[in-house]
Image (tube, rainbow, N blue to C red; front, side):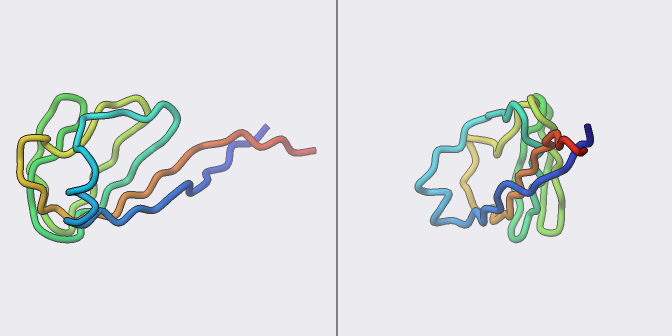
Length: 92
């Protein structure tokens, strides 16, 4: 069997999206998340470590690693979130 990487989703998180969705530290069981900071700056938490992020930064969150924006900051960060999953592909 071979593995293939599949792009599952791309989400643009702007101020409007941020106001409609709660910001909670979360994890994904089978997904790798790549987060691109498109505008502004703030704090992002990965595996209980807080990082200052600014426009142009990438954040890589492996599967099962808790991550998310600091829930106590004002949400001005605008991001692109790419969700990738590795799937097993059976070949003959």
